[in-house]
Length: 251
Image (tube, rainbow, N blue to C red; front, side):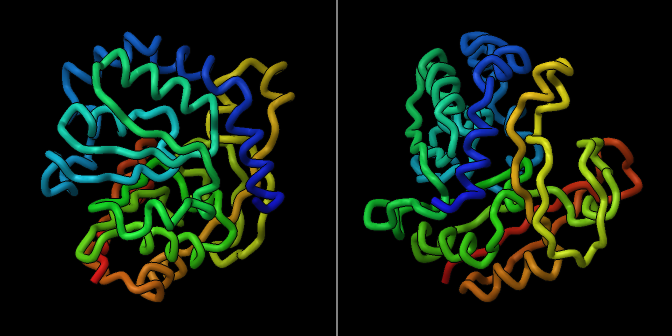
């Protein structure tokens, strides 16, 4: 694991379990919400799945299981790949409370065991800001392609590259040139929810933000057939894009 990913792991394991309890409730409370409305918990991403029953889903950087558990409730076989032991603990406790099974591999996504998981999944799915944690987007997309069965689908939803030039989503991250290729340090995603004293002690993450063309070209150059590119409004301002979703197939 390279140094920047070690750095990101430290950030994502700092007080993460306590944060999820504070933000989403105890595992039992979160499980209750998931069971009451699993499709609702998937939000817009539900529209990108053709079916749930008996499909194998790789939930990339699946965090606390906020999408993995609803998918399992709907009948999918879900494996979360994430770098945080704290995230694993919370996710598995939610799954247990919901009486479903999810698999959770704590690992560097770029080092997933392809002897075990290569050509294994029907869907690879990620959402909520993933790409900027990886400094080599081609290596990332190559791994996604390797995980999928032939005719498998990638659902890649992420923050819109316009967030490079303006803090459109109020994450309190610096703006920069849209075409910047710089790597920079910044607070991890939920640092702003902590008290000042804790926030100042939290490890920083190492980020590399991409342009639209860098993302789309990485998808195409690694063998995917690009099927769809949707843009979604920012939750802070419906007049500007805040997120996007790419649908691509392995052929």
